[in-house]
Structures are given as structure tokens and as C-alpha cells.
Image 1 (cartoon, rainbow, N blue to C red):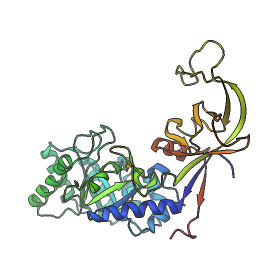
Image 2 (cartoon, rainbow, N blue to C red; image 1 turned 120 degrees about the vertical axis):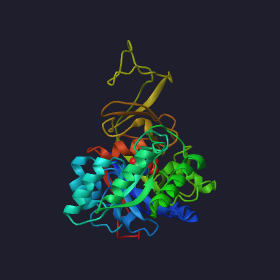
Image 3 (cartoon, protein in one colour; image 1 turned 90 degrees about the vertical axis):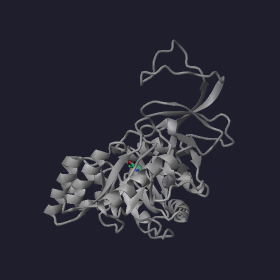
Image 4 (cartoon, helix red, strand yellow; image 1 turned 30 degrees about the vertical axis):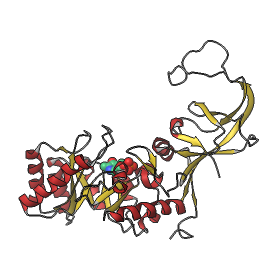
Length: 365
Ligand SMILES: *Cc1c(COP(=O)(O)O)cnc(C)c1O
């Protein structure tokens, strides 16, 4: 097997989903699992599909959802759709998150062409200032809802909000209550039932344990929480989850003892940044065949806690392995756990191989 390599442990992924599922059940929340951080990998998504805790599979790209065509869990498009992708979207996506009247009208036309009723979740912006109609603009909210209700091939399935993505606003009982109040208002005004009220992503998870999830929220969309086991409002680990369900491994191609300070005048590195060096005297420097083209070195940490990343260029990662208990040698492999950025970059690099422990069909289901 070639390196660098991303390894998905399907049993650990299943465990993480089970742990989150148990917590969500406490508040009667349905669970949407978000697959975009690993490109909805076709070896991983069947494990999610088969998990009884999972109610929806979601991704930000139609292309990824199309790859899940054969899975039975309903598919959700999280990113407000491009008008240019609606024809494909209505084919492969059951539910889409939307916020634009014109796009909704066009979605209705595309759905009519293939005789489908497409479900819509209306996005409301509670102040994070990414997608969604601004919550104070009631007139626009009502007009958009009327557009959906008037369309024969659209169903107003839900309302949702997204926080902690652009504005880094933390979900709380008070801001999420704006959404649940709005849902009540809409239900009364139009005499309808809004089935899904989705209260955010992995950053809303902590509200369940604190007992602060507003009544009326009945769904969460979880990406980082299930794949990395992170609660993202306060960057805490979720108890009982693995943070090494996905790991990145790379091979040592050079290991030599050299000074820790470069020799000569310091200019800028390959990325235009002026590096900082700490003088540690002579150290054992391992060079790994892994670079910034493959991974985000600021979002990965070695399993061996006694070794340290010093820096990286496009194709080389440089580590100080002086203090390790292990006698590393050339050809050895070093394994890292990943942060969200690290996972995203490694999963999208075509240089990174993918490997699966306990492949689908063995112990997982
Ligand atoms: C990416 C995304 C999510 C999942 O976010 P995590 O922080 O990984 O849980 C949920 N909702 C929307 C709209 C997204 O774009």
C-alpha cells in the first residue's frame, strides 16, 4: 500500500454514530449525517446508510450526493443550490436547503419535468451571516414561503439555520428560539405543519447535554462530531467517541541529524512567509513524503506525542523525532490524527491513498 494514506476505521465510525444517536434520542432529534469532509467516500457511506440512528445523508455538493444514489437514506443538499445544477439536483436529491425565490421557482419547474415533488428546507440566518434569509426580514420570509406553497412540485418540508461557520456565532437557547418561534408563527399563519426544524451542525450538539436545546428543534446535522468526535462550539471532545476513526499516515524518506537552525540569511519560505526557528541544537530530523499539497500541517497531530512537526513545504513534512521512545528509521510510517481542515485537505488530495479497516460486509453491520 502506497503512502500518504488516509485510513477510515469503519467500526470506529459506526461507534461514533451510535454514541451521537443515543444523545440525539434524548431530545427526540433526528440525525442528519454530513459527508462532505471526506467526499462522501463510497466505502464509508454504506456504513452510515445502514446505521439505524441515521435519518438523512447530507452533503454540500450534488456530485457527492449523486454517488450515494443507491443508498436508501433520504439525501439532503446542504449548500443553497446553483441554478445551473437544478436539473441534476432534483434527480439525485430528496431535500434541498434553499433561500432564493427565483431558484425555488426554477427548482419547481425542474421537479415538474420529471414528475417529482421536491422537498425544501428554508434557511433562516440568525446572525452568523452565511446563507439564509435574515430573521428580521419577515416580509421576505413570508414571500419566499408563499413561493414554495404556491409551487405544485415543491413541498415546504422544514426550516433550518446554520451557525458557527462564517460569523463563528455560538448556538444558544436564545438565538435558536428565534427559529422555533418563527416556525410557530409560520405554522399558524399558513395552517401548515413544518416537519423538520433543524437547529444547526456539530456546534449545536452541546446544547443537548446542557438541557438547553429549545423545544421545537427536532433535527441536527452532524459532520465533524461523528467523523472526528469533536463538539465544535467550544472545541471539546465528545465523550465515548474516537478521534482516530480517520487517520493520515506518511512514510519517512530521510532521517538525519542536523542543526535546528538553518544556516545563512533568512528570507521567505516557499509560501512567502518568514519562518521562525527555535534553537534546539542538533536534532534528529525526519522528512516525510507528505506536503502542503496533501494535507494541512496545522490541522494534524502525530499519534506519537513525543515527536513534533517543524514545518512543511509542498511535498515535504519535516519533523523533530529526537525525543521519541521509538528509534525511527527511513521507511517507517508515522500516523496522525486530523482536525477538520486536515481531513478536508487530505480527503480532497488526489495524492492521498485511501484505505479501510474492517471493510463493509465484515464486522461493521
Ligand atoms: C457543513 C455543514 C454542516 C456540518 O457541519 P459540521 O460542523 O461538520 O457538523 C451542517 N450544515 C450545513 C448547512 C453545512 O454546510
